[in-house]
Picture 1 (cartoon, rainbow, N blue to C red):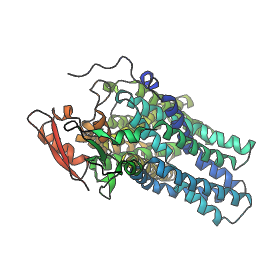
Picture 2 (picture 1 turned 90 degrees about the vertical axis):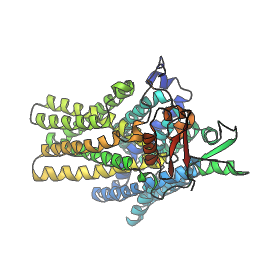
Picture 3 (picture 1 turned 45 degrees about the vertical axis):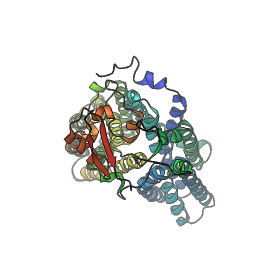
Length: 489
């Protein structure tokens, strides 16, 4: 029998959870970093050099984004504390070296190197905030938590550049970089504090049969050797796994394609708006996209599970909204504003769905790396969308870029359907209307024994084949309990 939904759910229930204030502060600080760094770097370098050189420095630094999945793998394997502090130190030192070189008007090559290193060593606090919400939130509040995280991201990209400009004018061109690095350090402290004591508690569990204490490593239960528990807590939950990491999962590869196409559509629209309405009005219209995204993100976090639109429906809605925007683009400005708000309403919920699904598909011990791959796919899509939008504007007309965005979003619907139909994704509990998973099933991403008993053996085998390439398909004993085995190493 399905459990009765709690009296409180969504944002009210999330806010009542212990430690919510620390989690919220850490997530907000982590988003501020992403909204400030590129603009702070641009303003710091352009203060003493040409704007073109500064833009080139920003472009070279952006190449450091390819290191995001590697940082995620290190965090999964060795634990947050052992990785965050060293890379934060490298990031701060590289930012300080860049600031000193720019203050002394040193050679420009001495600026390119530290800028690239600063982005390579960027603490992945934004990714960690999403993982933190998944780890610490109650199952019925998870969607609200991820929606709140997406809204904080939108706010950071609205307020971050304005804060950098204010600091540049009022304090120093280097002040933006200092505050960006400071926000990274603050986010690291708050996120680690929010999860304090959780790692050690998660690694030690009790065998339901024999009462023996065991330590899960990479989703595998094994007996810890003497003195091994301390090393395990430092090592993280990575364990032995395929060198390809979570990308061995076909549903996750489809999801990365969806993320790439969605980001391409979004940035094609952003490129088109200034060309349609002019620079000043275009910038205001881009801000309206963020406003619509915030409203949509808050709305999806307040809905019950049955009313939440799925990823394919969101992409289809985004495509239709882009068609509507292209139609009203030549009509009065008021309709153009409405069209931008309509497009924005689908942006926030799609981000929530992407990151939520990525967390659902992540094999045990690869949560941070999986989220990092999703972010990398979004960055790749942003570059593709900007290039496609610019080509459409040059070859046809500004509104043609909006049409390209509609085609890109529509192209992601098929891949989104493949993701939604994957057995692992469909096996996840959705919202408070279903029974909450056990602590072990919530950590490992596998169905609890109660859930496994309601699955036919063939379906259980398919679940195993998509969760981890090291799994042996589980069987079901005569009592209806799921019995799974996993090859270690």
